Length: 480
Image (cartoon, rainbow, N blue to C red; front, side):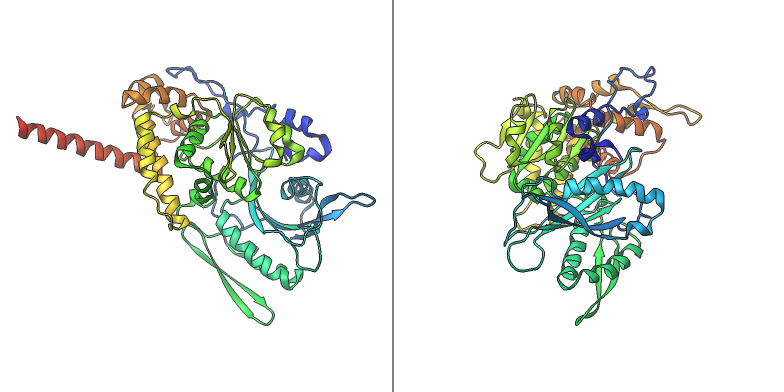
């Protein structure tokens, strides 16, 4: 595992040093054939990903993390009190790897640290995080924190599921089932999770049915359906637009698309988790390539000092630890906050082309207050996807293909000059300097044929432009 998972052993400053010192060889390539040279990107530490391999199991393991009082002290520390499957049932190499992961899970399930006290009331919340292996592979952590059944004051506990697939809504429903069985007996969790682990992870739009026996209720059949738009299955935009106005979302998007340092602050872990994943999803078909930590544990707070781009979620009580940082955007997600942008660079409202900003705001107005999560996702995602179609969607025409199956070459200068309208060119020139665009184009150069939702939207847009041009020519002919 990467060293961000070993903070308890090495300390946050050691962690910070190693986090940003590893450069990926895969980012190096000869650019002598380019019209222009782009800066060498740095390696991501924690990044967003989406499920792509449909052969994955639903999950790798489930753990229950409880707060236990330290002997002779008044503070609490998180401990794993239940795990499925057991480490003893794993191969030795796999067991050693998972033991490293467990250290990270403790950090992210209770990122606040040791400052806990027994409670009689605690609102259940669900959030997620991402773990990155040394080899670049990723695992998603889904966590539900709640107050366990019992009487009197008691500390909360957390259920955490580790999976290679990203589908927040699906795992939230799984947590509902786990929580229901936990109220009966911890032993009731095992058969349900065993059935789930043996079930194939469904393809987008498909449903898998899980049978599970509950005393006094008999055998239940739980249906788990995966969203059709698999690239949005880890996202719910409702929290983002509840916390920020449309204009504020555009300012955040503008900062993100130029790969700046951005910190989001809120009291609730679920708010941080949902907003950060939603902001990253606005970049589709591009992918945030730098540090991404949806919930920064207290022990890792020094990550805010990193000079490289990042998206971080920090709890509001840590404001004093980040306020002294300059040259960044700090966003207060608290509803009714006096100042949404605690600090900013000042140009956020002028980064995007003015005309396209207006079109984005107009498109976002089409969403309805009573829309479902799927309906909202469709309106929002298509609005921002349209932005990229109009600004950089002409890129396929400027990839010069070679014979003999050799990689193509992106004609970057010609591409910039062809950007229409001219008012968008300044934005395009800045955007093509980002790592997300660079890696996107590298992939385009390697692939002889391009398919996918983005390319489909580009084709539709170009076709509509041809029809509009033909219509204008026909009208001019009538006038003449």
